Length: 367
Image (tube, rainbow, N blue to C red):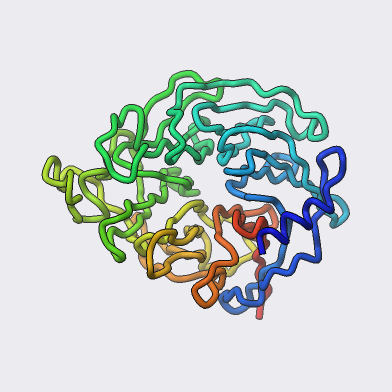
């Protein structure tokens, strides 16, 4: 399936790095199960599509991991074009847009492309604003986003499945000014977060965390966490989820000094991108729900994830969790893996998929 998609993209690619959306890709979208009134469509074809960010003029920017590219998608008169605006970068998964500039994480570096939406066909040379992130490939793909404080937040995963790495350098979420100065750790004890967002009303940080492997098929749970203030510790590598001690490191610290998750997610589901739903298209009870992309398990006999879940909050507690979209795992085989979600100005939800090389649009019509 993925080879077919890449081949179709090759056929549609133009010499200047712009390619049209391939409309004849055969993805089994009829297998995706959604609540009544919702529908899903192929919105764009983008190889290895990872994190998503929205520009001021409606451009959707897309990072990648193994492809090494950054893409920009524009739409005019109902037709979409995908441009490759940067290439040959190392793990350029994270993208963020702020005051006319695109920020891209590339393992140990953060790059800034100024006035990007005015120069999509000939992007300006990027400015390297920071180059002191870890160089390890393990968890080297980063998520970045600007917070309500106008600071750039960046995830820095552990360089291992489970280890006592220096948490001033690893296993944290940090933040910096838009010019790369004043780098500081915001939250620690985080094995790897590949998605975070801020509550639209409280402006407090929420993030997903991927739990460790090789303990058990069913533990530890992955997590949805809440970090309203700086300096909180979320347990890694000593404590997992609410109270599961690590078999090697747990006795050194225990769980008493760790902040438990607001919501435990299915073990090994690999939650990545998340967004608070802030649009007006979906039913009213979706307002401020958290929608999480679960990329799916990779080394377990029993599969988990490969879906979108939604979490309804009551103040700062999880009131309910339910499956929002599922079907990328079909009879034990995955044909797609959700990575990130993005609420569009019209209220529709975009979903990136790095396995299928696709971006989907989920919309709602009153049934």
